[in-house]
Length: 455
Image (tube, rainbow, N blue to C red; front, side, top):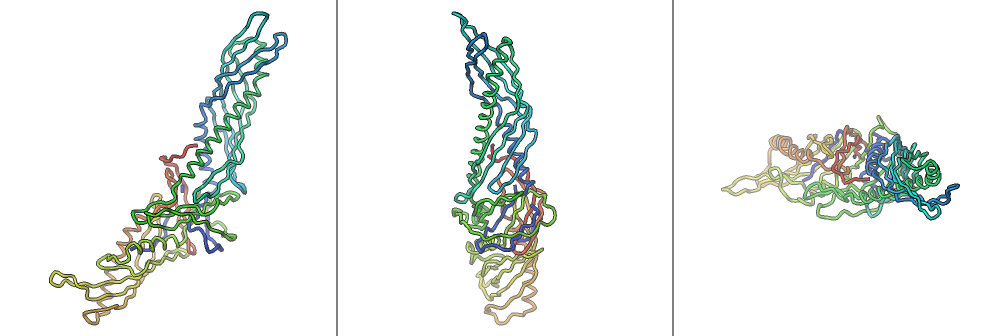
């Protein structure tokens, strides 16, 4: 039997209060919003990993025939061009109407290569070779990406990608003076464009890997052998001026069932202004249907199982989330048994309505909580031993609920259920806010490793 969820204190992404003032009747049950600080965190992670993955970068050989005064036509080759290291000087991320733009300025871009030339002088072929180093005076790279919902998963696509190399300085080791200037004049632009194309191709490969990673995200998160959370996306991501919103189904399903995406249509959604600090990276908003779905699921799985000394639920617990508090109500049947010559005989049944309230907490990446007994009422459903004394029944029921039923419920709530956080990330410094019918979790996010995310 499931008990009510409670409010909690605490990605990876916000303390921006995310309360729907008006929404369509079919709406997502979990909304996750990555704020500007969260986008900066993700950008820094991806840019640093891309800078590591981009080197060493091999650039295709370049062959050219250059006309040199007096000498004539000289066949020149730049080979073994390798980019050995880059340093990220600065990077930015911005959100547009249709996607995200990430830009980075690179400094200390170092390349090495080999060079060779040959030309014919009368009947003799003259040739030479050596190596060279290239120092690039700054480089700008950028990529524009969009995302859409594809059958409940995220599909990432690139709308624009480019690299712009600033001035470069080629230092040749060996070679005649006439060759140096001819080589620089003949190869500078070709080396520049070849390196720019190679870096752009590498970035596109990284974007393709990121798309594969997003597409492989699980569509459900198992809680136990009974319940799983449906974390399929129900609409395209919503790009705003400084945040990105992802809308998730969020309801619980039997763990042996496949999560199915249900596309949802929306009217215009309005939000209240942000309250408190908006510097948190991630905001996760869960409506009370999430909690009611898990209580209904456990009730359907165990509708008649006796619990806590023959206490059984007669209907799924009902959860209500209000400003500053979470309440839950459940109807129970308490059967009184007696031992008659080693045989357990039911002699009376009491119908009990219980109201509890509680608070939610974040434990790891789970939303957990605890409840306390607020109020209960009871009526005698049937009796084989005549009328029961109300005062005695009330005293016994109070002890039973406080000492057995509530601790039993809290043992389940302590474990909680997983928030939709990607594996390899953890939420930290979380804060919980309850509003009308929703719980909002705002938090920062840390990368703890173990994720298959690779740029």
